[in-house]
Length: 87
Image 1 (cartoon, rainbow, N blue to C red):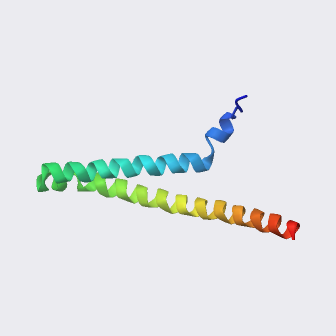
Image 2: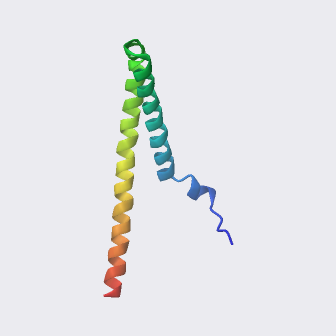
Image 3: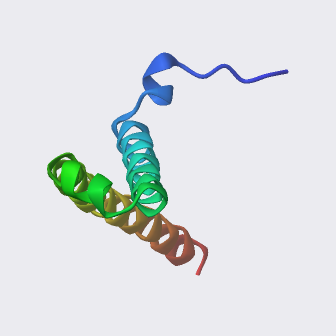
């Protein structure tokens, strides 16, 4: 029997942060690829959009690391409780 997932669990804050990070990472990789293919004139024409995208990517990375640290701390805390109960 398949377990149904609620919409709330699918679109949680951490999943939105993860997908945003992956999308911006992909866009930045495409930007660099276009720069490598087209040359220096492409870099001079599009350095401002790249800078804005890089800044947004950096902020999303910061939020993602903070969220992952929080989730990791909760997992370790629950494991410590389970270990202390068993011993």
